[in-house]
Length: 52
Image 1 (tube, rainbow, N blue to C red):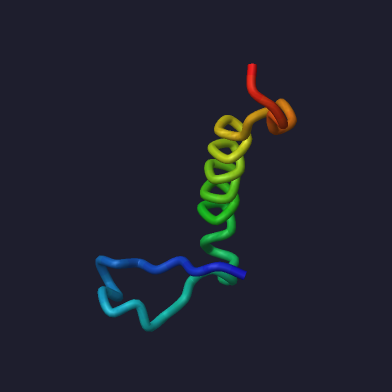
Image 2: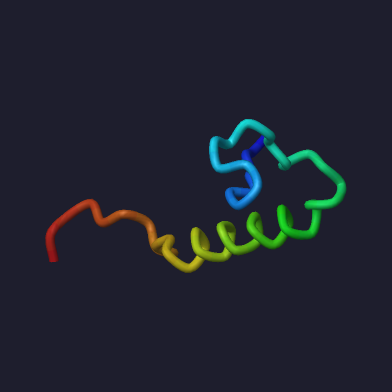
């Protein structure tokens, strides 16, 4: 579940467009952007348990 609003036509965010078929490509693009950002910022190594 998510939230997607057209702030030009709905500045008070009353109509959630997340589940509308017309906005599916935009939703997928936003989800991919968020996923890519999270993958690129994760540390691939396990946490250090001791000092160097």
